[in-house]
Image 1 (tube, rainbow, N blue to C red):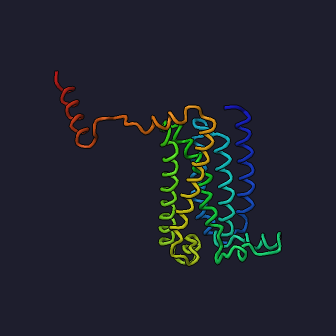
Image 2 (cartoon, rainbow, N blue to C red):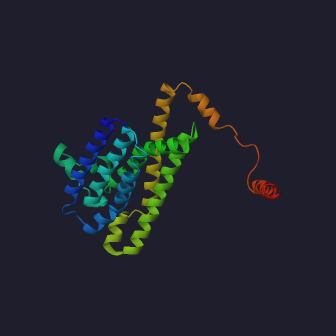
Image 3 (tube, rainbow, N blue to C red):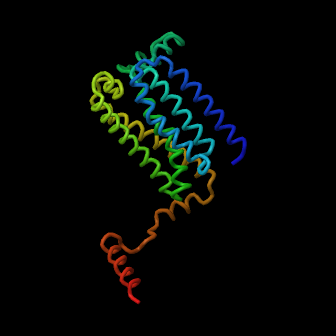
Length: 245
């Protein structure tokens, strides 16, 4: 890994640290801010512990960095109260919500969409470099994992809301009265991830000479024998053969 790569990571880390400190001062709801930052803390620790052995590309680092910046804005105000419409009105003289017909604060919806759009590629990099996935699976599995982690987060929100209850639970859940909020959030994250993988595929089609060959090879049957009970039988036969003198 080159020094320039380390310097780039340091710059991103410094910018994020400054934003985190500034937005940690007098958040709208301190308890909700702390709850929103639990997963950020877990991610930062895991990233720091694994970085030397598994450095990510600058593209992946940038995408993760952008998502974390937006998440911290949501954590500071609580997602349902981010004053983006006030900012838009001040800058451009009209209400963005009114012009688009929005009846709720949509900052959370945007971040869910960007969760898929920004994080699907880093997930793809992990799959390729660790699991050695190729072709079709290098696009489908990142999409699948992004969708499933979006679902897990909705379950995490539900559990936290049930556990803490009251205003904190409602602030963290952030449904704003929409009974289909979780479904829409998961749908937007899935759409973002799908777009990210389509864009990645289009770039690779243009630049990767063996794209079609790799794609076709990834869909070929590798193991012709069935698994399940047939595999158990083979294991037993192998064990019996190994035990015989």
